[in-house]
Image 1: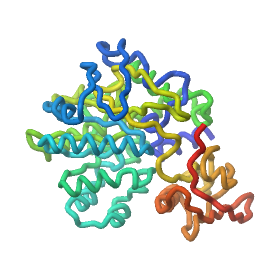
Image 2: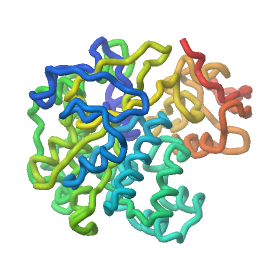
Image 3: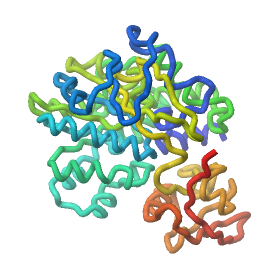
Length: 409
């Protein structure tokens, strides 16, 4: 089963980049990264931007000014937190308002899925047409609504967007056999030098998991190592492909802003480190940080080496947009819509869904895969009700589902 779980993690792109911290270590306050800042801590200010190198609270306009010589900006996000996406949009606007030519790099699309992005920016697709044609719910597992404002602003202002990720099959090959197994064309979408030896990055990677996590606890050291290779493949490819898009399509004043999971950015040990070793342009990082944790406890201080800029946002309990709260088997086994994990506080659990159930239909929509479920869930708002049809022990069961936020603890 452990091998099957690992394949499921890779297929879903579910690595440390998007997982919440589930360990005794405080991800925000590790003594790692840039040595000149690793010994300092800084406070988090709600709706404030802190330049961690200078230790100064600055305005968004000043933030853009301090990036005057920067060519690549990594912005680390929590995928299901709307306020993180608000910061991404605010950073893009600040740079655009400052007169910079802004390009946008996207973790959610591989580099070979460029045509629909060009058609979107050129106004040739409706919103629904873009979501369907681009394979949003094929390549990404999160609600389109989180990103709608960013994509709309990019189209309104004519800001080009680029897929920078590796195709999933290439990441899976790296996981299984290593980078040397890639064909030359695919290898060209990775930097010449890739480092797998950094002890601080390995510490950070493992810190995103805990021994209490059911998925992590089933992995051997060899499986964790293969998962780490996949993480590095994403780190290295996304920064490199973004920089190549910038050099090919951007002018002298251009900057590319990469929207990417915070785990790829934290402490400049992932994507930033892999790119800096291979690219001469200035590279910087920005990560939003919630001022309170789930349940209301204040967050902070934060290690100054966590990112070059930290932008304080409100805290949030649970995802910002509706999710069912289950993980499906995907390509594992004969039942691709079989439930392998249930969020104990999620809508599915409240409706009575259990591990081992097979999801058959959500209202009138047949569910045959994770992609089907993600696309269908994107049509609902918090508080909406739906009829959920499942199969349990071979027998059909109908459940009344309501998309409810988890109750704050």
